[in-house]
Image (cartoon, rainbow, N blue to C red; front, side):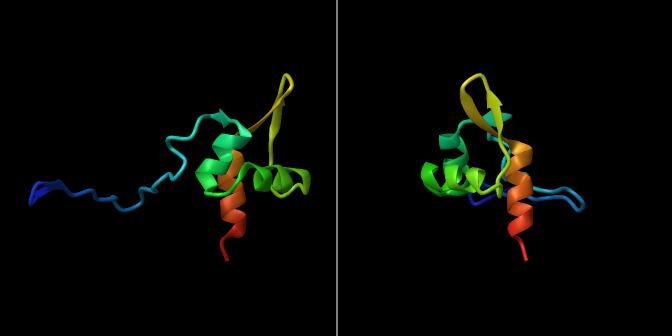
Length: 77
């Protein structure tokens, strides 16, 4: 629906907004930091403490969408 030149977005019942839809399937530490609004050092710290999951691809560390979702869901109280 268009209201005063702006498109109105509606989320239908039962549909969940995916805050990580634009995040790569397996992003870099920098990508994860940007998605969560923190610095890359924080992401590395969370990974080292085992609070945020990650995978290794060759010599790089990657954080998947599922890792980010699980982390955020674990933080919700």
